[in-house]
Length: 478
Image 1 (cartoon, rainbow, N blue to C red):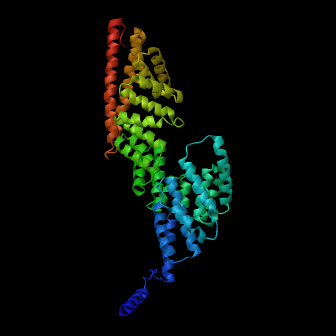
Image 2: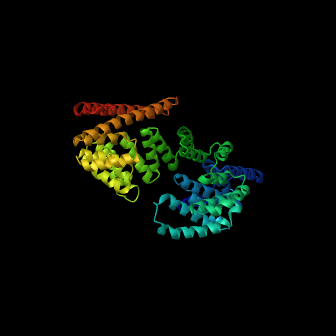
Image 3: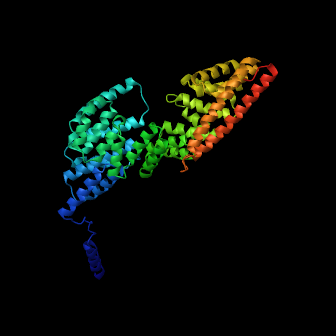
């Protein structure tokens, strides 16, 4: 009996043991909450990607304390801005789109059109170029969407940003132009809107972009714009400075990594370029980054790796087949695979024709003793670039093989003069690069010196051939 009573007592105690009380967010005064909201708004208005991310954290903390619809709308719009910026800069998805979608039930108005903009911009950035007839229906749908969004751009900076992005993406530049000043005037305190206008090349202004950085030092996106413009203007040192700063601020942006990688290639920093191409590819498949990676491997002498990569790239013949075949031929030739080089060079010529492709095809056909074909290729190369010294020299070798001494004499003589001019240009370029004490030009300086050494050797060969022909065939050296 006592045991039964004891059991009842124990059970009673167990049932009445208080359960843990869920933690409740501490109450804050309306004044403190208003101050926090003001700070979140201020961060969002700064416009830079890092600012928007900080604003998102601030809005999220406030949402834990309040179910206010205005606060939910601000948080939703800030998340949409983050999501669009991540697509534009190819920054890995932070979950901002999903966070915005989760807030839609707490906001009375519809944001379906803005989610549609996200999807269309993502498709633009991720899809290969399609034929015009394929794009037409999508363009018509986008134009309808832009017309709808046009009514709402005065309501908020985010709606103005999305309207501008959708209009530019749909090619509606003429329709947008008259509205640019009114948009900027309406949202004059918001730096995101100003940035989006700068991100369109015809409305870009270096002065306005510098002003944005003066207002917000963490605006890596604007450094990216300035770097791209400097590349277009061939101001490579300025471009390197701006793009390096952009990458420091936004290290996860594949777009910035890709442009900086190509600039590193121009400075012959092939190892750095390779790392940046790899970083761009870490964000997803990218044909331009893959081709750039193949070029970097080629210049680094990693020919087999480059060929393996180009084999993969040539599974897609819709995009840049000429370049892909050219670089595979280039690598085959350096490994002494003359037949493979010849086959790829011929394939490259079917897709693109320039001085370099013709010269490479000439070298491959010459190595296979296809002299008639080689002559035709070198002649075409010279027609496109009269300063192609190597093609002059090879034509001299073909003439010599055919015992056409007078044309051979003329060709080798022209090659000597050509190399002299090329060496003078390289010497001037080298002197200019050596003025750079920052170390940025070190790779280019080393590359130029190697090119000059090779050009000098080939000039000596051509000069010796002139002397030999002059002595054996009686031609007079000018």
